[in-house]
Each structure stands twice: as structure tokens, then as C-alpha cells.
Length: 328
Image (tube, rainbow, N blue to C red; front, side):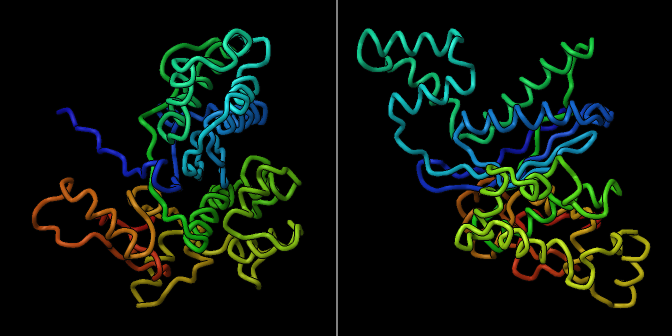
């Protein structure tokens, strides 16, 4: 039986900025991204693609068989010809046919031809185009350099619309940065080169700006910003301790005894709502998205927001009520 694809929940870049948690997995769960050089190539492509498309990488985590990217698509500005040319040159190179064609157009007519502008602008400020082109470009590179052919990615990427408020973005960012901890690769994401927090701690400016976008700035003292964010990643007493509660059996024992998980413990679990919740945010934000897309839901559904059952995130709501366990 053929299943119809669920349409994505997206905001128009002409109306407001939007944050998306994007996830893509390697076909058959193969560990094809396991080496540092491969991850580094994917990271470089991600940064270049983001710069070209005009989206911001808030944070990310590149794992061995999948990746997470938290990206912000801002309100689409009016780009001058020089700004458009600069993006094309950075992305393709100054001597690439695409760059030379735009330079020739400006030399002959004083401006970029409208059809050329439209062609490039269609590829900008759209999370779907950003992810599609990133995955395609990486697939071509990987297959060429590893004597491989065929599909690299398992499926269409998943995306969850995240309310663009600092406290909401902070929680999802922490969940993403803790992926290597959750996988047992490190006990502290500061030691993982291929996540936003680890890259920011090493002094990478785009990574720092990504964290500053929800953690704020403190007179240019980015170490204070990272220190503040670190309190979300770790409890004050557990900053240098082991991972903590991750085994589902222990979690179920806590719930059976009517106990509660702390945010510190919960963020070390694989939270299905953060990966499959469709929309995440305050109740009002989720309700607004429900009303905007009312036609996607049956007549029995009267309201949009659903709580994150058994999890210590009372300020967060999801659009998709999951029928399976909240964690895995």
C-alpha cells in the first residue's frame, strides 16, 4: 500500500522567521558517516549551503548514520545584485560558470537579468530547498569518492516546526547537542567536534552566533553565553558526571512509582515529540498552526496543542499526539 507523504508545516519567509528541526538518515541505517573526514565534508557543505540559501544554522549534530540540524529561516530580504553575486561566488567559486554569467550580465546591462535573479532566489529562504540541495550535493560527493552508486539517504527528511522563542529553541538545541552523549560517544558535547556546541566552544564564529541567537549576548563575551547555555545541557551538580539515566527500564520504573524525571534526565532520552511532533512550542503557537491548517485534521479534532506526556516540559506543546511511548 502506498502512503501519502504528510505535508510539512512551514511558515512563509515573507511573513515571519521560522525555526525547523531537520533530521535525515542514511539508507538502511548504515554507518556511512562514521569517519571524521566524511563528517567534516558534510559540515563544510552544510555551512556553504546555508550561506547561499540565507538560512542560519542554530546548532547541529552529525552522527554516524544520521544528522540533526536546527535552522532558522529569516524573513526574506530584498537582495541587491552585489549581495546576490557574492552569495553565488562563495557557493560556486568566482571562476564558476554561474558566477561568470552574473558578472557578464552586470557588465553588459548594469544589473543581473531578472530571469537570473529569479532562478537563484527560488533556491533561497526555503528549508526544503536547503535540505534537498545539501543532501544531493553530499550524495554526489560521497558516491564519487567511495566508489558507490545509488541512493544514500533513507527517506525524505523530517522537519519539525519550532516556535522561534529563546526558551523553546534552547530546549531543542540542547536536545540536538546532546546526541553524541545519548549515543555514548562522549560524556560531554564540548568534546565532540561535529555538533554546534562543540564547534562553538572551539571558537568557530558561525557556531557561536547560532547559540547567541537564542542564548543572547553578554557584551561580546561569548564564553559567558556558552556557560549560560551549559546549564541547560548539564545540571549544576552533574556537569562532569556520567550520562545519567538513559535506560528505558529505569525510566519506566520511575514512572511506575509515579516519580518524575528532571529536565536534565529527560534531555538524555530520545524524545519522540522532538523528532515527530510536527510543531513544537507554547500552546498558543501550536493552536495557531492547527487553525491555519485545520483542513489537515479530522472533524473530531477540536484543538491543536497536546502536552508532552510524562515529560518535564510543561511550557511546551506538540501538534501531533503520539500513540507510542514518548521516549525510546
